[in-house]
Each structure stands twice: as structure tokens, then as C-alpha cells.
Image 1 (cartoon, helix red, strand yellow):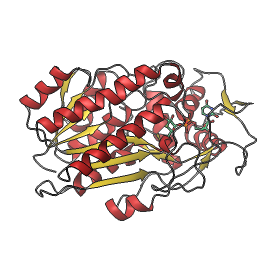
Image 2 (spheres, rainbow, N blue to C red):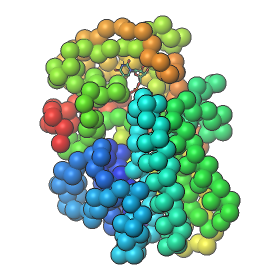
Image 3 (cartoon, rainbow, N blue to C red):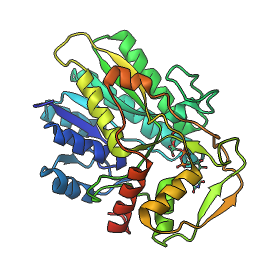
Image 4 (cartoon, rainbow, N blue to C red):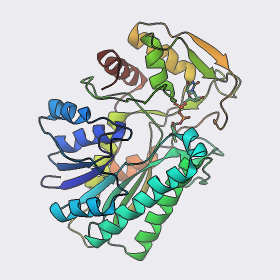
Length: 341
Ligand code: UFG
């Protein structure tokens, strides 16, 4: 990976910033493009504290074609990791046009520019949300794709666009990575998830209950057909997830004229219930997490977790961190940064 220059869109965000650190640890030069709509510039100083390198940063939107083109003119980019996207499922139902414009049109612009500059290697941040209500668990990559929200459809559409690009020109290298539930934070406690307002997702919500910022956790349903009645998910440590991106890049042979396309789940393969997460977080933090049981949240699935065997076979990818690590690292980030960045 030495002497590789990687453009990371959305590189100041939660998963993006953790991936930038792993790229820098692998001696890559990193260029971040991020419009800071859901991230904070301070993350760049934190990255420098951790790695000793202040990445090159352009505060622009991927929808700004001229500004994006200029970056490709200025730097010799070898590959792109594309994170920049809106990501709130509920909001996507309210504002579908914003989601299709930012996520799909933005990605199309990026791909056009990549083609123009003959940069034909991309790692795309997809989501297990493309599976919708899975017929069976663990979920395999060849399971039926059936998103349930505009957000999920944006991921599905981009996957299709990438597939068509590859079919038309086999010199592209394309990795589609379908994330399960990313949680946790960098072990330094310097970077982590920084949601705007009241968190939608389980782990950041629990973390704010533990500090007393929120009174109690609302558990959405305890009558699912799961081991304890609460929803089961495949939580993956964000640092493991970040390493998955490095492995995907390393999989590609940049010198070959022939490209490759891979679509892989990134998960642990282990399902944990909401109550498992609550108990593990209580142990990690030494705080009690009061909760109330509410009705099911609309659109939620009872249970899903990854079949993680393909990523292991293809990339040698295996997660290193367990739920204890995910809770400990989230807690360290939360107490060090009670108000976020
Ligand atoms: N949950 C609660 N209370 C909360 C929040 C969540 O009980 O306050 C429960 C949910 O009902 C679910 C589990 O915790 O059973 C996990 O919920 P999250 O909101 O943390 O995550 P989701 O699985 O709903 O969705 C996440 C991301 C999506 C992504 C999807 C992909 O938010 O963007 O994983 O797998 F698409």
C-alpha cells in the first residue's frame, strides 16, 4: 500500500475517520473529501494526534463536480473509498429526494470523474439494509435484495450502477462492502460516533443513558421470536470494519490490467440481542442502564446477522473485537467526549 494515494469521501465521518487511520497506518497518502454536513472538522486534529499525520482535506460536497474534478487534477489518485452519504433510515422516508440526490447523483458524479481520470478502483460503503427482511439467517451475499427504505434503495441502486460499470469495462476494481451494525470507537478514545441530536441507534443511545444525558433506554419490542424477545443484530467494531476496507484494497492488484468485482458482508457472524448489549454495556461502564419496553419500531426486523464466511475466504477478513470491546471502547469515547467533538 506504500505510495498509494487514496481519496476518502466522507472521511471525516464515523466509519470514514476510522478507515483513514488504518490507511495512514498502512503508509497510504490520504485525501479526505467531506462537506461536514454530518461530521466535524476537529476529527482531523484527532487523526493527527493518533497517527502523526494531518490528512489533506477538502471541505466540499461530492455533488460539486468542478471542485471534485479539481482534486483529481491536482493529485494522482490510485483508488477511492466512498463513504459520503446520508444514512438515517427514518429521515430517508421523509426526504427521499434529498437521499436520491445526495447518495445516488453524488456517487454518479464521482464515478464519472473517476472514469474521466482513469481511476478505476473503488471500495463502496454499502449496507446490510439492502437485504430488507431476510428470509433466513445468517444472511449470505446471494440472499434476495429487498430494501425497505429510500436509504436502502440508494445503496441498492449504487450497487447496480457499479455492477453495470464492471460488466461494461472489466478493468475496474470494485468492492461492495455490506456492513452490518457498526459500533465502538478507536481505542484511544479520541474518535468515535458523534450523532447529531438524540441518537437513533442503539449503542450511542445506551452510551448517553450511561452518562445520565438521557434518562432511560427505550427497547423497541420484547415479543420477537428471538432468544429473549428483543431484536438481534450483528454488531461489528468500527476498527474491524475499517480494516475490512484496507483488506479490500490490498486484494486488488493495481498493476494488472484486469479488474475484479467483489461483494462481501462485513459482520462478525454473531447475533446479539438488545438485552445482551445492555448487560455488556453495564459491565463495561459500571453504570446501570434503566430501560422501558415499548412497542416494536416500525420497519424493524426481528433478527439478522451475517454469514461472514465469504469475506474470510476472499480477503482473509476476520473480526478481532467482541461485544465487550465494542462497549468498553464506546464508553471510553463517550466519557472522554460527553458533548462529542
Ligand atoms: N433499538 C432499541 N432502542 C433504541 C434503538 C434501537 O431497542 O433506542 C433496537 C432496535 O429495535 C434493533 C436494535 O436495537 O432491534 C438495533 O437498532 P439500531 O437502530 O442500532 O440499528 P438497525 O439494525 O435498526 O439499523 C442499522 C443502521 C442502518 C443500517 C442497518 C444495517 O442504523 O443504517 O443497521 O444493518 F442500514
